[in-house]
Image (tube, rainbow, N blue to C red; front, side, top):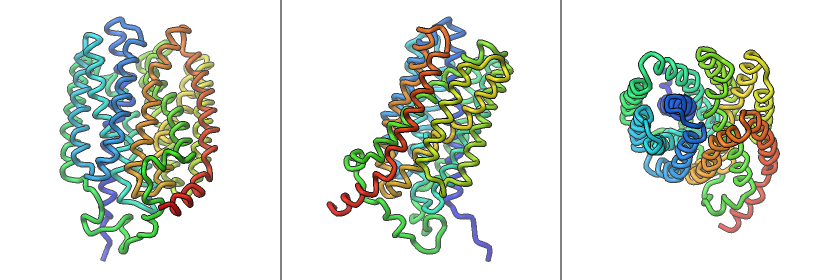
Amino acid sequence: MKQRIFYGWWIVFACLWASLLGNALGLFGAGVYLHAIAASNGWKNSTVSGAISLFYLVSALLLIPVGSGISRFGPRLFVAVGAFAMALGVVGVGRAFEPWQVYLAFPVMGIGWACLSTTAVATTLAPWFERQQGRAISIASIGASAGGMLGPPLILAGIAKLGFASTTGIAGGIVLLTLLPLAVLILRHRPEDMGLQPDGALESRSSGRRQGGGWDRRTAMRTPALTSTITAFGIGMSMQIGFLTHQVTLLSYSLSNQVVAATITTTAGAALAGRLVLIKFADKLDIRGASSAVLTLAAVSYCAIAFAHGPLPLICACALFGLTVGNVTTLSPILVRKEFGSSSFGNIYGIASCAIQFFAAFGPSFYGFLHDASGSYRAPLVAAAALDVLAAWIILGGRNSLSAKRSGHTLAS
């Protein structure tokens, strides 16, 4: 008899869609909102950048309870709350005409993005996969790249034809009409609740699932493995999110609206290509070595963007940057899941992603203030390149540090 599809892959599909909408309207949409709000109101970039930083900061503060809550209670409630908050925040951004309204709408979006984030996706998938956990997270993360490819161009086109308020209203409706049914009908907590085993196995691989089990947050935070992961990916995500937030404005200085939209789509398409490569090799790679290489490539791309002359070199440099976008986001949960195990993942990655997101919250303001101070984006881009080189070195510094710590932790327990 033909074996049925393992239900965990339906969970992956639901997470992929949540990631698509969360990133289309949150991570990638933020840059469109910044440009639209600043241009229509005559505000400085730094004014709106502060609100977007608040968006990431609110999200960061919620990642610990989101990770722990999904690990304990399952993802249904959190994804439903995320859908409502994202929809409300996006609609509010489209109807904000005073700075205080902007600073109210973006934190509400931050609640939504926390519940639809990589942390939420990775924690949802952690109980369902053991041998294929890297592949499962990578496939679900394709939604983020698809969101980057589809979201900004569609939002820009919608603003041009329908106006900002109508476009964000439609976007909010799509979130509610599609995510709520997935949360109720598809998402489940653990495979054991359905009489299944991780990866669709016929028998439990308990030895694999106990690997790294029993880690508490305090002990994990003392390990160079986790601190190096948080620091390196915190820097990388901060520089990445800062650039993505300002990409539309940066490109608008020298490109038409149509070419700007095409360049953003190219960036997201390159991110998708990078994620597809990761899907194939995620469970075989030296994750720390791969992370260092991705961060180094990101540094090269920032320098290329900073010194690009003419549309074609700028577009190519953005495509080079795009190759790193998805993997900087995806590699951190894969690394934590691999080094600390599934049983501790919700708690450990919750605090790790909170710290990473806290770093990232300052990225938009970092670019905004350096831009306003220097009069161009060259200064923040060169600074971002230097910081990413530092991050690439830091992630390698945590290599092989966990095995000794795990031995001591096991003896103590």
